[in-house]
Image (tube, rainbow, N blue to C red; front, top):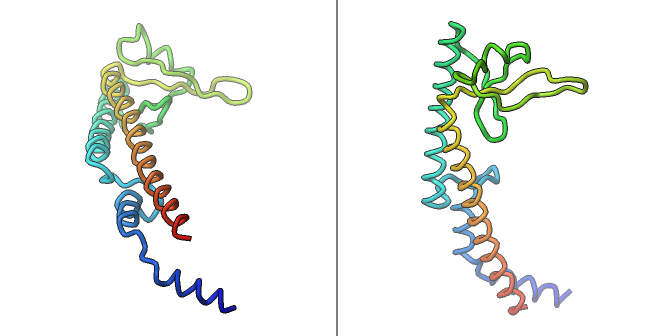
Length: 163
């Protein structure tokens, strides 16, 4: 019991690693997500991504309104691209000679294709940029996590030496 008290007094006297604590708090939010401002590069990439998201969505809405006279399409993500889902029976009308829309793939049920994912041809280059930015964003998040892991590892080695 005396040994336990000595250890407790010792632990109470240890100073926490303020730099590590600050780095973790700066990088990770209360919902365990990497913060946009965890690094200047990540902030830049996420801003670019949001901007492109809005542009792609606006382009899809313009194309749908021009084609059908109505807007309000439900947007989907397929292979990292923002697109729209249409009934398989409508594919020929949308992708005629691939001038207006590009077929990305099909959603299938247990027995057959139920819908198709299409994107406006005019949005392809924006979606390409968006996919590249998302790839770079994922690499930046990995780098941030690796740096935090290294800091935690170094802190753990220091504590191991102390004990």
